[in-house]
Length: 158
Image 1 (cartoon, rainbow, N blue to C red):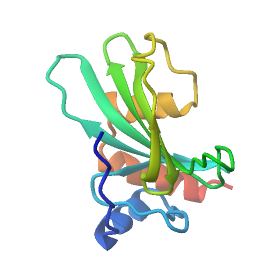
Image 2: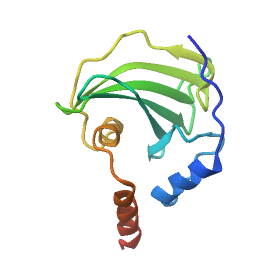
Image 3: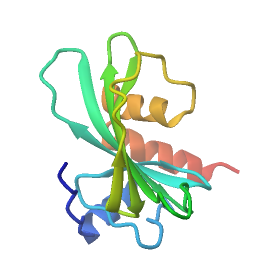
């Protein structure tokens, strides 16, 4: 397996992310470039997405990158970063996880552990899950003007 190259922080991509998602800041130590789009975050992690070109009509794929705020592994086998390959059937609204690789340090660096289980079964993503947000971003992308309008509405909300 190839190791993933270190990603370089580009101020233009961070500015673009911040323009779409007010208040978004990468976690300390997390590096992103123009290929990774911010997807979501919670108290445990930040999640980024990168579309993978695929030639089959109605199907799309993406890398989904997880940057954990704290070690999710053990002391002997730390896990601060992971990258999954999601396969989407945009026609049926289903997805599956093709593979996941866990990394010892942030930015998909350090020792890694790939999963060898093969693709999961096709399922509907749970509402408000990372998979549903990834499905929406890949199968139903929003125009930049929709993102700006939504950001403005949320900033005006009480």
